[in-house]
Image (cartoon, rainbow, N blue to C red; front, side, top):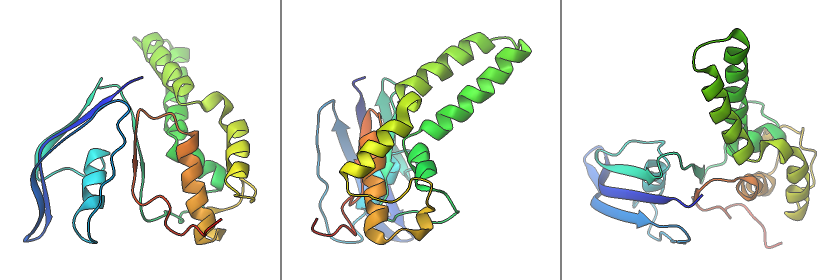
Length: 192
């Protein structure tokens, strides 16, 4: 699916410090944009707003079509909570949430709830669209290609910084998002 991400008149700050205001941005299908600036300028804040994680103080962010999906790889690696590499890959690719939605739709369908057939069809289409059916097989190949030679059932908290960075990159290579937002994706990687 082709998607366009549009930001209009965005503003953000921290306390009395304004990071940016009146920011307009259109990311069209096929665009690759680099955002460069000093530390503390608001690059990560902007990416989190574009991903829908944080709300702007003013302005709007929209997707066209509205069903498009946005993937976001944060600068700081989340290595807490006891998740395994496999679970992190499923969460970051959107497959884990799609699986939960498909499971809930299956239960509703089984119960004969009104509209359950339509909800199930939408959930299944999303699950398939995100590549859930063959995620495990693709994960093995992609992690090996990136030099992440740990078992996928290993806890992420036990990974080194470089291994965690590789896991983050693997999640993006495995994802089927319409728009990808990467916040310093190569932090913690060594030369290899």
